[in-house]
Length: 212
Ligand SMILES: Cc1cc2nc3c(=O)[nH]c(=O)nc-3n(C[C@H](O)[C@H](O)[C@H](O)COP(=O)(O)OP(=O)(O)OC[C@H]3O[C@@H](n4cnc5c(N)ncnc54)[C@H](O)[C@@H]3O)c2cc1C
Image (cartoon, rainbow, N blue to C red; front, side, top):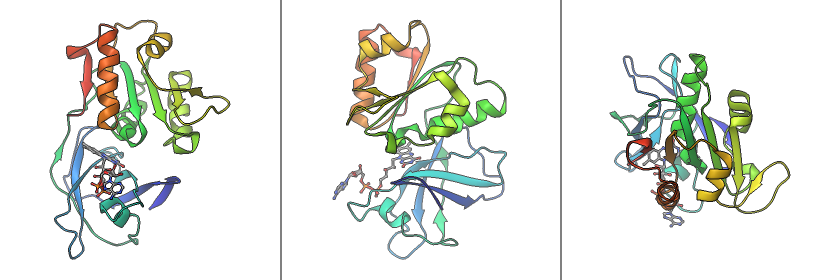
């Protein structure tokens, strides 16, 4: 376990033999301790199949006694229960990735895989957070994407960052060529707002991939 931000932890987990997934997919996890085994929550793999271990990047909600709060108290060697892999977000070609907070996790795996294959190309990541301290893997995304990594902060203006919320006008200002594929992942209200913003720009249907 290693901190990624003030409330996000990276978990390294032993990989069952033969366990494979497509970058962007998730599994339902529970904690292998009495009373927690059936408390299943979905989390996305942020490792690649070629890595010896599985990795999860998990936002810990310390404000109530749920699964993530409990995950934040685990010690090295404590057990997790893994299940089947699933998930709608998979790479379908170059495009614009829009993420809010911990919703970026499927895009971590996708971009890491593209980097491995030398195929980052013209992909772009628009990443919305409350403050710069909430940005997950800021340095790694900057290295991978350069100018194609654009952050927007909702809570306050900070030097070097865009301030506000993502809407159709903002998308248009950042993405001059809208004839692209779009990928959205974040909290439900944000996903709905982004789908609406893209609809206003005439982008819908197969051009948009969303976690269902
Ligand atoms: C396909 C998929 C993949 C995901 N992958 C990831 C990932 O890789 N990393 C990641 O961090 N998250 C991921 N999530 C989100 C993750 O599943 C949730 O954050 C997790 O289930 C929360 O579990 P919990 O038991 O801690 O909170 P829950 O009790 O399930 O609560 C969930 C939400 O309700 C709020 N809430 C509920 N009760 C209270 C309360 N009493 N007080 C305050 N707030 C409350 C919490 O703030 C939280 O937003 C994914 C979700 C999906 C659907």
